[in-house]
Every structure is written in structure tokens, then in C-alpha cells.
Image (tube, rainbow, N blue to C red):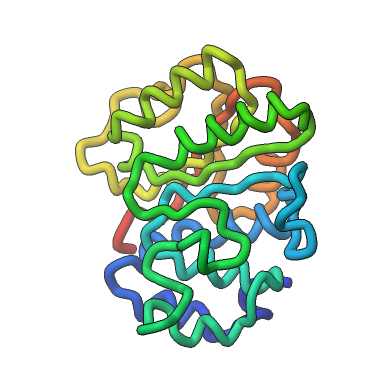
Length: 222
């Protein structure tokens, strides 16, 4: 089921969040493809120890994430009526305690990749050889020092974590050589962040080492 089918007014709600609307728009297609076509997880298997893991490190503007989770049946679509409202479980940053389907609480940028490394290492130690770990990051978030440490660590021990970087050009200074050069030792590819077939093809198979998929979308603010 698509986001539009689950909640026809969700795009209007995303637009209404003027501060974080670009973050929601830029992640919506990737999130939808992940949950519709890639992740081995469902509301019925949300606590299964061998489930795939998805971490939203780019925790700002979670309206798109909430819409996709509602479309998958993790919670009633009516919850979307009051995102950020008093008493609503759907806060301006996702909370793993309050929102079914959320693996980690995020919002303070730069934590997701390190947490994904820890999860993947734990899964390896427990013998879950086919379980996959995905983490979604923003391009400007890569400036956080914790990401540099996680990138180097994952490359050194060849953990097959998949990082998806949303490139909406919100990094104001730019990076010589592009985003891919910041991931030495990783498998690097790029996709159109709105092309569902490209996204699904890039994320489908389990890699034998860490990989980063750079999803190019419109510049921030457009």
C-alpha cells in the first residue's frame, strides 16, 4: 500500500510543516521503497530477533516516516491527524517507546550510523547471518565526527551495513570529490532519490561489506 492510499492528505500535512517539510519530501520515496520492497519486516514480525533493522538517523521532519509506518499498519492512520500535538505519540522526532516500528529515538544528528554498527555487530555475534541493517542519513549530518568514526570502523571489520544518504545539498560548503569519497573502503553507488526502481535495485541484495547509496533529490527548500 502506498502512502497516498493510506492517507490521501499526508502530503498536505508534510507541506504544512514549514520548518521540516524539505526533510520529509526528500525521504518519502526512499522510505516507501524500503518498507514496500526491501525490508524483511512487518507489524507482525516487529519483535522478531532476525528481522531487518532500519534506523532513521535523519530524524528531523519525521512526517514521511510516520506516514509510511501507518501505511504498513504499524499504527492507525488517524494518528497522523495530530503529529506534534499535545499528548500525541507522534512527536517532532520519532520515539521508539511511543511509536510502533521505530527502532531508535533520533533527532540529535550523527548518532544513527554508530548505532547501526552496534546493532549489526550484535546480530553477527548472535548468528543472524541474513539479517540486514539499514540507516538513513542526511548529507549535512555527515559533518558530525561520530559518523567519521563509524565509517572507518565499519570498513575495517567489513560489517554489511547499508547507509542511505539523502543528498538535498543542505551541506552549505560542499565537499570536493562528492559524498562518496567520505566512505573509503565502502561500496558506493548513486540513485535518483525519487525513482523507485533505481532505489529498490540498489538496496535489494545483501552486500558483503558496508555500502552507501547516495540518493539525489531536489536542493533543500525546493
